[in-house]
Length: 400
Ligand SMILES: [Zn+2]
Ligand SMILES: [Zn+2]
Image (cartoon, rainbow, N blue to C red):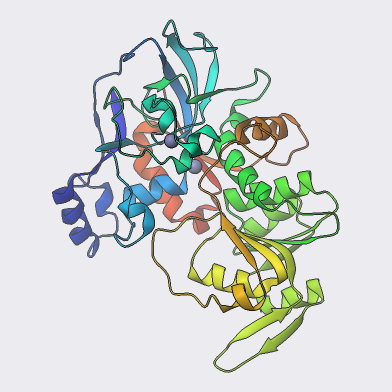
């Protein structure tokens, strides 16, 4: 079968890095460590695994980070033990076609999404599990690199088949539509972010960014805290329209003077120091930064009220340069998320996400803007890069 995967192959990585200086699409070329190539169709490595036939899979920003290898060797994740081959595609919907005798609750015919992607104590069957996995924080596993998966070519959402350990899948409620099921994973991530600092009634909330995660964060904050006042900061007009549909009471374009606009909305006092140094006093109670770069975090720390919180949902593999003085000066709480986990109430982020998505009023219709057959994945990647012109939100790849 053909699969899209990344090989941790230094000569290829260096070659494509050099070529990228002249052609930014070099990571899609033949020399790239990311290849859409033949691999053996996976077989169950033991009775605790199951085989899934994939139907479709969303293209995520993290897939793009992997394809374009924009991880700085100096960032934290770059030092974690990697895996030799990483199959791309985790926002998948598939059907169980074969289940080992000990595959737990899963039976052929079940529709599943993938809850746990990166290796953790769960798939590696490390007993006892590390404290993080025991608490359901599989993305923070402390046993990374201590053991290999029983099979290298497990496949992923961008291959027609894959195998999963029984701990990995999430059973999709039968009444959930395919399009909504494709949003389970990003919804689980956004939910995990909102749960890091759930707004209280009357709180002023800012969501920075109106891509898939920004829009889902807006919709979730609105669903969990209907009496909070949510503002969304959007870059493009098509995103601004989507943010209003997602439930934002106010949408601010980042092309206007954002400090002035946000000061007006929060009744904060705006101050200007030297060299364009601008701040607000009395801004937002909670800010979700779904962009996650130096500029967005710089602004988020200045737009939060004293004692407010900033949650980073946008991921970035570049060590930045940042004025962190608002954190101590205004005693701002800063945290972030790495995908999803088990929430404080003991339910998984996925269970919460499914519950939200099952409500037809949860405003996600229209979030999937583009669909491509898997063999045209390069067109999907190009569309992702050219989101503005394509007016793309979520791009999905479909299997035959
Ligand atoms: Zn994702
Ligand atoms: Zn662990």
